[in-house]
Amino acid sequence: MSSRRYLLFAFTAIVAVTASTGATSEQSSPSQAPPSASSSEHGVAVADIRVEASSQPPTEIDDRFGVVVTANFAGRERKPAMASLLDRVGVRWYIDAGWDPATKPDGVNCLYTLPARAESFLLTATRIAELVRLAPGAYWAVGNEANVPGMDNNPPRDYARFFHHYATNIKRLDPSAKLVGPNVLNWVDTCTGCPGYAKGQEWVDAFRDAYRTEYNEEPPIDVWALHTYDLDWEKLPMVNWQFQVRQIIALRDYLDRSVVHAGKPIWVTEFAVLFAFDGFEWRENARGQERLYPVGDLPVPKLEAYVREMLGWLTESGRSYGVDRWFFFETNRGEVSGGEWSGAFIGISLLDGPTPDSQLTPVGTLYRSLAARRT
Image (cartoon, rainbow, N blue to C red; front, top):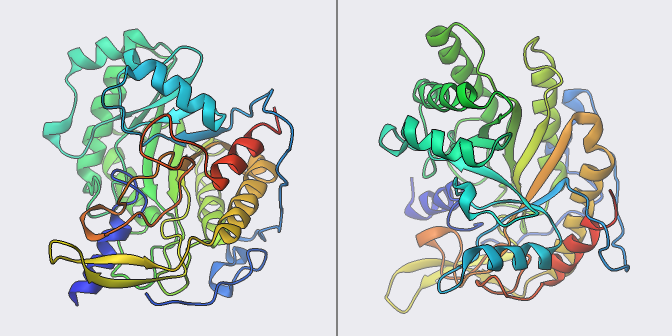
């Protein structure tokens, strides 16, 4: 494959840890799904639902709204800085890729993410016990994007073993704890304009088979977690919210065909716009390295329309599909996103800089307002 095609895949693979990750193309209207994004094959049509932002101050918070925190806390006391950041964006739920309840501020909630990239990353039973005692009844996610090269990229049999390690050690001490997983990227689709990766559903089928074979039971997942992004490099910016909804609906259909998992809640543990510009170009940076750079200005109206449409569906229709919570990626804007292959920040963020005291972007102001509308 060409080096540039490989780099596009590398961007797609780095959705969730370092930052959200040309070919200029016309963008479809946010209220019209292209044929490839239709959810009709799953038996449910995606409604065109829009939510208007409230102009009122955020006196009440919809706790279905959450964020993935990517701030740089260097030189700051973490707890008060985190509390201030969450207050600024107007939510009480967050993910920060951490797993220690001792770092969580009072009055907010964290989905803790347990490391599961490889055997050597697993926490010991002693350490798990220490964490569980600090946070009875907490929600614990196991790993991150096990179906994606460049992320955890776990073989299903390995993940089955890792999940069982955490499940047995957590539930033995705290039966009220909730296990969240497997945080795969998308469900029935992968990406366009890149080599691709294992579909979420196919990977989960193999994981469940491995778990049943090894432990003679279904994996004890309490909350099914999904990352969903439009990953079409041929239609920029990546604001096709119907593509994302299609993944959620397909997961719901899949779970409800299972006696064990039917009716279990879904959390969208990451969603956003991976590439937020109308085009890109390849050029050398100051070090002579070829990198991807966005072309043009950030198309704020398109991004705001995406947020309204996606949040409209989640808040109005998501409940009927068992979608109990969602986390926007990401809070903070860095100098670069997409890992080592990009030369600039290419996604969207709620805050305009890398620190927890950065100011709200237009998208951040909109997200805060929408989170304040419902209880």
